[in-house]
Length: 477
Image 1 (tube, rainbow, N blue to C red):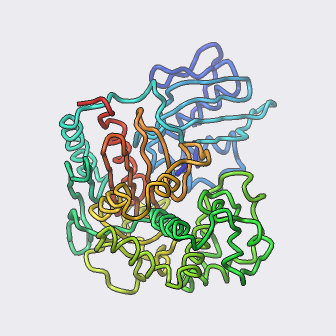
Image 2: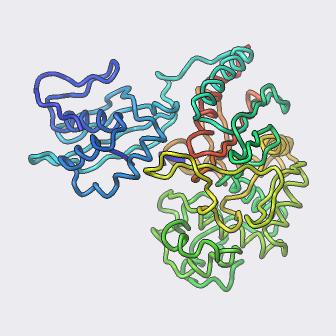
Image 3: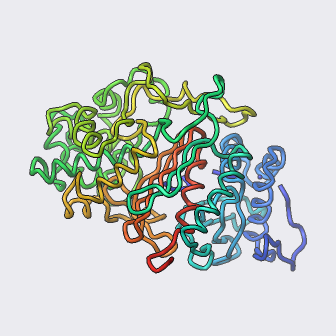
């Protein structure tokens, strides 16, 4: 999803020379250029005191974000400036790349016009890899060899724990596991280890909704209130359509925050979320913009229940998992033993050691995310989808074709649709403390990439990016 925080001390005092990051120069003759250079070097240092000093000088109102900024620095490794797109005395727009992965961002950095030119805005928005910075496509054998080297380095450095699968035309060409599923009991990860998958559940929810649409049991342009007739906020229910819920354009908001933290163990059913959030008004006029909404997918799960007459979990198990042959996937409650499920490990802001993510987990995975799966099951899901076993060709195309610009690509129905190094791929990622995963399906080339990790983002995403950025194209060997 989006880069989906920031900041830190070095003040460039002299005018008339430029601060250089690699081969790229920031203008030192403008306030924005000088302060941006100071921010970038301070943030990249990863030093808490350096970062605090920068904030005290240029952004004292942001001192309360110190911990989250340091956590963000830890996840990204900092940024390497690649290109300055535009520059004015008070604003710099540039392209940068995460040092810890191959994720590119567009950075917008603004300062006040008046002395001392306080930092007024920093935005980092994930973007596809620009063509000018794309790594060369490799042959299949070269890709496998490069991936083996990369995974050895990532695992030895402690940056990856999980499983990686790359398939061609439905069959694995690379499948390996790394790290520990349970560090306390020294249980290693294997290719069949189950990992929590976060928001990847959204793909299953979207398939379920489109199956019901294909069967003529609902219409995507209907308001969700047509099916959830007792929804507390009737005004919202009468305006937000299923299409808008599926594309995150309904303005229905998120589920995470203080209310979730307070009631985490009480939220045991989808309806419990409605009891907590169902009286909220729309965050913006439905359909007017894109904003990721976990709550919108909670509502879609309830629509599935209402229309099908089954619980969300039973419907997905019967109509998706069973059809695709996914025997190791589910959303059982956290208090129910699940064999071969890994422990998630996180490093909260300020922590020096990895610790289990147990106290952050919801009671149960939902239609918005939080279930578990294996890389093998995700391949089975991708294969079933491409064989039109889950949906016919028309609805499969409707499901996966992008509809709304979300910065990094286009969002379809529970799937992200993007072009990577000239190749179209669709899929979805998932991330939360102690878990990260990504599935990418690239139909023109026949490749499927599934990566699951039992540690903080972007552990899995950086590996998925490494693979898709180098995959053979349609004309490759």
